[in-house]
Length: 543
Image (cartoon, rainbow, N blue to C red; front, side, top):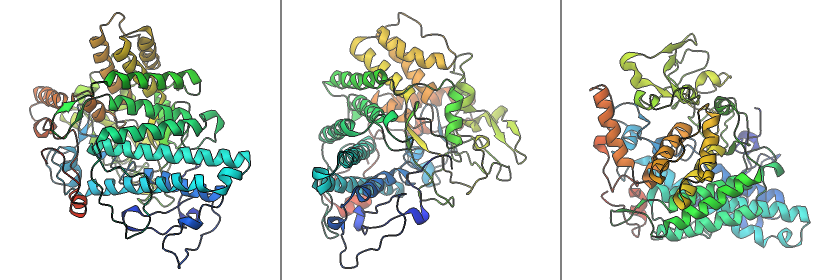
């Protein structure tokens, strides 16, 4: 291992709080030296747990831990929910298993993955609620040394950030969701909460992230680990504002954006300006090196501003991911690098949209597979339907696989390039294509070896160029689908892509354009099991 992993398992796990129901609380810390005994006389031990900074740290690490679940960013949130789009899809047209049913817009409320994610995110929220309640009640929070108070303030900010992030994920997936900001007090507590209007949920998300930004340190003032920095909080907050100001599916089955949407773009612009002005973050000079770093488990937080820590010492599923196997070039299991199934594929028409000499193209799109000898074999002819993301390729990972499917590659949630592109988008929306907007997008383009964007574009033309720029810079990183939804472009892009692919080759495998239903598939259905247990939960439109 080249760096510390927040989710390290085995003997480093400490358990103090017993899990219960859907809001089980398992506190974890790599700093623990021995197992802590559970108190058999108390099913819920939180009242006696928060006594020192180490215990508060353990509790906060338990909030982080949810990020690394297979039901969140180890698999479902990073890959499964983020496709099909105009640039990528799950391979295979027939809706014959869970991944294809979900990706190809055939999902129903009974799909088991939806409930797993719903429950995981609410467990994370409940853990955060506990930390947010208990840390201010600690004696050290009021009477400790300055270093102790500073450490506790940081932990409190991290818990608020994570609670905001988990609610943001819930809103993106399901729209209106139950809002709960207090911890579950007992296993018998009935959680029969109705759905809360997304605007109120967004109010809480923004409050949490603003308060987190006030106490979480800048990157240069923290250890180089996966704990969130001030720049990352502000960058995620900028993203939240853009999503809040974008289109969304309302419960009356219409896609609308708020009347005051420009206010949110302006707020996003403020956050990106503060990140950029801080000087804390910058682009790696090499686009390729960014992804080689991920594959070799190397942190480089100047550009990679926030990553989900993924690690399992035995290669098992808990706290590991499928990044680099599901979304990697096809790789023979007998090769020196291990197997990659390459379920997540792109298509040749997207590869052709890159400008001439764009250094990102051959990093982003792998036109080859790796055979059992480790040799690269180009996929030609109709095999171009098997072209795949190249950013997490097996032959860059450098170590023998511990498991055929699972890897320790972190999932990135924010890169500095995204901050620059968000600034360009927000500036264009608020003030038009000013020099500020051009400077931001041109910084990204120059790193890619490209000339500056054509000057003198109209506001609409600049936006359209930015739609393409985000696809080329951030492709396969989990943003395209949500970008298209907030721009109200997902359905039209899917249908246009399918038509173009059929014109390219009549038998090209792509069905998302047929399956997608406008004003339905911009949200996932509320899991049926949750509705069975909580009758106050209404269903999303058309499910």
